[in-house]
Structures are given as C-alpha cells and as structure tokens.
Image 1 (cartoon, rainbow, N blue to C red):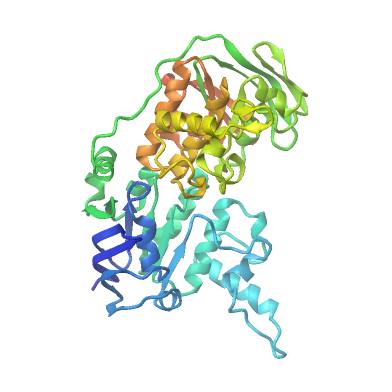
Image 2: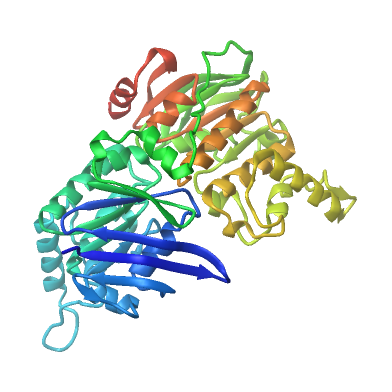
Length: 492
C-alpha cells in the first residue's frame, strides 16, 4: 500500500488552472523527487498535501486513509511535515527548545523542567546521529546545522512523510553530504521524503524516483534514476532541448580591476588578483571562506583593513560606496529579496531605482520615460510578468534576478559582482541568466562571480580563484582544471 496516493488532482486560482489531473504516489522508505520549472505547480502541490490548500477535485489518501478536507493540524497528526527553504525555527532559542516547542516537559509546579528538556533533546539528536548539542542557540548555527535542527524537530513529531523544499539552497558541499546521510538513515526507518530541488545533480544522488510537473500536469515519472540523464530530465521539464551556455577560452583583455594584497580582518587576508575586460572570474570556496565578503569590499560596501583596489588604474581604496558605483561597479547580492530589490515596489520602480536622475525632469520623476525604459529591459531580458506595475515579490526567482540585473544595466555598469546568480532559479531561467552574462562579457564588461554550483563555475568562468578560510589557495585557468581539483583546494 502506498503511504500517499493522489489521483486526478485539480486546483485553480481565480479560474486559472494550477494543477490539472495530477497523479502521485509515495512509498514508505523512499525519496520521491518532484521537479519542474518555477510555476509548474510544485508549491501548490505540497501545500495541498500539507493541508494549507484544499483541492478542487481528486482523491487523496495518506496511509490508506481517504481524506476529504485535509487541514494542517490533521496533516501533522498523520505524520506529514514540511520543511521549507525559509526555515521555521526561533533563532534565539536553543536547539532543544526548538525541537520540543509546544511540548516542553513540565516539573512538579508546572514550570518547564530544563534538565528534562535538554536530556530529551540530546537523546533525540543522538538517536538520529545529528551532530548538534541541545543547548546550542539556533542563531549561532550554520545554515546546514539549522537544516539538521529542522529535521530533528520534524522527526520528533513522529513524521512519516517529510516534504523538503529546496533544502540545500544555502548549504555547503560538506553539509549536503551530512544531510543526505541523515535522509538515508531515516529511509531505513521507513520515513518517506518528497524532495524538491532545482539542483538536478542532487536528484541523481538521493532520489529513488523522479516525477516531473510541467504547466501543472504530470510530464512523467522515472523509476530508474540511474539510467536517467540530466539532459533527458531537463527536456521533460522544459518541453524542449535546452542548450547549455558555456564561456569560451581565456580572454586577454586589458585590466579593469586590480586587487593587491587586500585584507579584511576575520573574513579574508592577503588576496591579489586582476579582473580583465571581457572576463568572468569565478570565486570558489565553502560557505564561510570569505567569498561574499570579498565581493562586498570590491563594491565599496565594506572597508578594507589592508591592501588596495584600483579600477581602470584609479585608486578606489578608502573611497565611499557612491564612488565605486559612479565608476561602474555594482553588486548583485545572494539575498536578492532583502538586499537587491524592494519587493513591495513594482518592476518598473525597481529597474529605475538606481537611475532616477536619468528618467527625471529636474525634481520630478518622468513616469512615462520610466515605463518606456522598464519595458525595454523586460523585452531585452525576457522578464516574464503580468505588467510592469506588478510588485517584484510576485515574480519567480529567475525573473527577480533579471530585474536586479536590469537595474544595473539601466545605469550602464562595467563590472558586475554576482553572488550566487542562479540560486533558487529553475533550469530554464538559469540558462537565460547565463546567456545574459555571456552577452555582457562579449560587450567588454567584466564579471566576478561567487557560486557554490561547480557546474556553473566550470561552464561560466574563464579563471577561478579558490578560497579556504579567508585565504587564496589557487588561481586556476578553467579549461586546465577540474571540479575535483577545485574542490580539493576549497576544502584545503
């Protein structure tokens, strides 16, 4: 008997079909991956299974029990737990308090028994072989450790079905290995997983079966994952062949930016490199190696403690952020929603945000010109939206990334500092962003890219600066190296 069985599932919003005639089943002790582009219906599907949405039509049974009106409380009682990309933990409480939240052991006078709380949490962590301490404060944990705490919390609730939505988006390679080991351990205990990820290489490493949603419909289910290729899976997801973008051979353009023995205390030290026109310089390393801090210093957002930065031969060290911007240096941060965009503002407003002087008549904003400029970039970058007045928060991850790039293209920047440019982006939008990057360097622009995706690093960089614990361990020409060599230098 299937642990979950869904047949002929339908769901629409405002007359628009989001899920149409979807079938799905999940067996005890398996990892069933669910993949598809943004907008394919994955989020709606898992919200129906977790009780957050009611289905319009179709049948749903869990552990052999047919369910008519599933709600979150009933789903939890039946053992369904969803772990979202934005973790549901209280940061300033301990690991133990988060695991046993709302179920704290009480003493004789009705107060929380802290000794029992920590002992019980340690027993849970030990049984699950999770390397955390019950007394640790969640805010002090790495992203990977918080993910493990979230899983411990889920399994304490006697989870039978764990839905994981982009669980590795902010994890290091080592933390991903720990997570996969834990999933395999839980599979042996009969726990089933629905695993959603845009990182397709993970699907081949952890999934027993793969189901594809495309435009809200079943596009196929693959039971023999070992014989499935990445190219074949992408074709089913997108509905056509996808041509993967690759940067050409090393460029010999003139030096655009020079960093000489730059250091920022506690983050990185003694780094030297040059970025040339028409080049993408990749920066590799584990999370915490100082990669993102280097980008922030190159953008003028953080001050150096030592060393110098020159752009087109002009000294920038010690100058304010606005001077970096005026000379054509911009940063697209990994935290695009909180640091790169104003999510409640429209697409047009976000695109023009850095270029208000260009689209104003004196002190008055020229709304007609703003609209015209925004539409030109929507067309140029193929940004998918209802209209340019739509709030950015309602776009997909890939389209939000394009809006952030459009903001800097509108200002005519020369050096693009990109931190995880395709994080949380589906395969189609990812290749579109790669094409934009390729076009930029062909125009003589330059890019410094931080990425945790080794495929992206190898395909989309001319040279790779590898970092470990704040120091450079190698500067490699991409055609002359391999993923294994990059990883070995990154691990140290």
